[in-house]
Length: 318
Image (cartoon, rainbow, N blue to C red; front, side, top):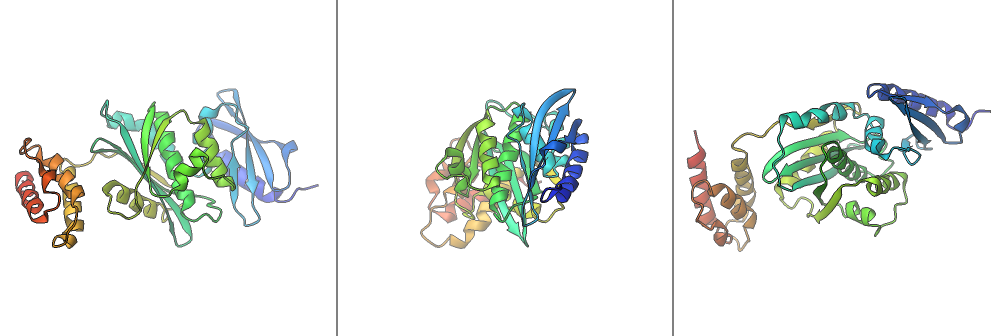
């Protein structure tokens, strides 16, 4: 006798199993494990049994994946990525270290964000070493299960950590603007939905040392704004596509950061305001011109900061 949702689960399992073949993972439905609203797929890689994954079918037509029965937890992130249709992500990432050298001992920072656009959820993240961009991610979340942008926030964080695992990164600071990112991780919030439970399970099994840092949403933070843009972009691409870009930034990238803060803060030039973000960006760039000058001492005077800004533009202009 057929169980509830069996036909839909078989169809979704077939898509998943076909995707896994590209990674060399053999999947097979466990015929004796069908239950109402769920099914299991056994996974084998290089002749080794990885364990089972559980497919859940919801009344609203969405599917989620459980990896709690996998024996080799190192595969959790990769299996989740293939489930979410992120083949492009996994095929690009292994080549990143050949293109980009991560400065050592510079500590890596990641900025993560989620977005909900026209009924679709996207995720975005960017990893930074010092003042250099290392890699950025953007994609759509399949089966946000009514959580709007929250699913994107969680996926962005897990994508960053999966990248760290692939590149033997032991520690990273994650900058986030949605408080649940840390509170579910720390146990302050109870994970009640399948998507948050999967997130908590992933973090518990992840060996990466994570430092959490809260930033205010849309506060003008340079890197956080990029993550926000990537998340919006991700919500508008096809479910079969995910982007992991490791293109090196241009040599004048830091000038663009100075330009960014100059344009944003110019509106407040005649007000009592702390322009520390612009001052810091100028200070770091100005060291190439005058390493002795303390630009940050002028953090409250936009006119002085503008003077330094114009010097930088003149110095670096072709």
